[in-house]
Length: 107
Image (tube, rainbow, N blue to C red; front, side, top):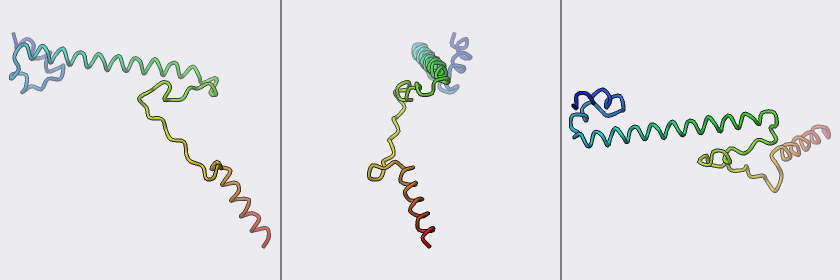
């Protein structure tokens, strides 16, 4: 009887050497657990595929694109870069370039 389950057990991820140590009850519990874990992975992949299809709908209206953490709550929200004294990075760079250009033109 266990010999008939051997290929199924190995295919489901039970190590070959551990198979012969398990009782029939333990083997059935492990097979069921492996099957449930695989089903959860498939459900997760299906949900990700579905969400990706939803996100693809926004390609014609990028301004309406939702933030990633709204669709994938397990993804950590990236921190906003901190600006220097209320200036955005490009504004600060613009000021520095203008100041340098003024220095060069005064020489």
